Image (cartoon, rainbow, N blue to C red; front, side, top):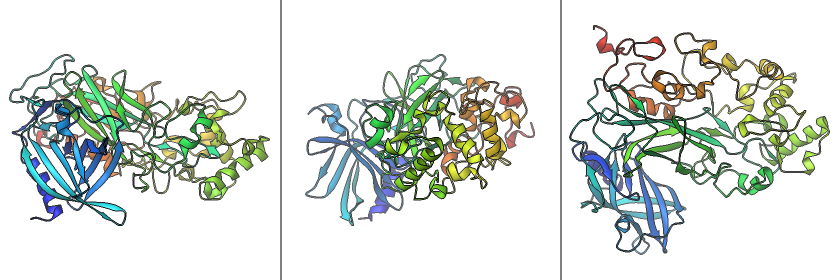
Length: 543
């Protein structure tokens, strides 16, 4: 028998070989195991163990098979004899085996195979880690409640009806040429910060925001908001490790915040909320650590779009959810960023401001200092949080750099590869300029530099709208084409670029080479954004 890794890779190749002849949208009840070709993950919604249902995620690569997460779902096992029971995996401790039935295969764009497979893994405990080997792979008859929706004919869907049909053929390169829908996801700010230790002082809690826009491809693409459900889940860090925030959240915010739940009630997976023409998941409790405890300020989230009437997946993507605690207060305040550092900060504050914070811990900065980032009103006569921070540190004889407070030498939150945009000061100015603007009345987070400060051209000036809230060409938001702030495509971080590469074959903003990520035909020369034409591919140069 082949070795484990060879079998695992053979599984991927075997399943890939079914595409495209046996691929289409499946109308199924939710809950069957899915093997994702783009990222090599196997998601099993329910594995039965000791009468409980556990959600298990595994990663299958050409060099390893690893357990990514294992969490109790809190749900009962499916009723005996129901179709859902056919999807439940089983653990056999006697033979050290994990059996997963009825696995479907997800291809780029979210299309699913009509075939199903049963797979059995053998597992071994070695030095407190679990090692997996593929023991058996066999095709099986799919359960009756999964029906393949035919993709043999082409039709253009007008309006917001979400029945799934095959799109017209694309006229140029696109990694989504067989997809009728695409979803593009991103973070609202390009980086969120938090401190890890909240026992004495909370500067920022775990609070992240994920945004997505769904587009139906066509001769004239259309933003879709009706007839769909958009869901998200963290892939690498869904166990909320690396912080004691939840031990002190009640005292800090005056509300009960269950473990691994954010201040808005959202968790590490769930349904996104429609706001305008985009979908949002706000206040996500994402921490900068993988489930293994490894520091990772750029974890991935998966965003999935489903037909609301059938539950069929019609598109999916992955994006970075940036989060870091690399604020480096200890560089000036001593300690290592934990309780010693925070105690020194509170002592300094008490000495200079006549407060008594150290005797009333834990302290939330925004209880006194207003901060739009947390929708905090603060106290009258007290400077807002951004002014207090920038204003105080601007007075120092040796001023800290941007990366002394913002993440950071290791995180490097400003990571766009666009020429001339490699310095924070290029857009925001230095520490003194930041402080002066805030003292003059600029509202932090709500009044920020505009692209038109440096760039000119049609529709570049977003007026009073922030870049992250502005939209232009065809109702598409700026972030949807150019990506999130501080990581504008192309990015220096490979993870950031993966969506753009999948959609158009390169890492620049969408439409930089051609427009067929959204358009099924190359648009006319006068149809492009910012006054640019639609025919810009190299093979069109002679036309």
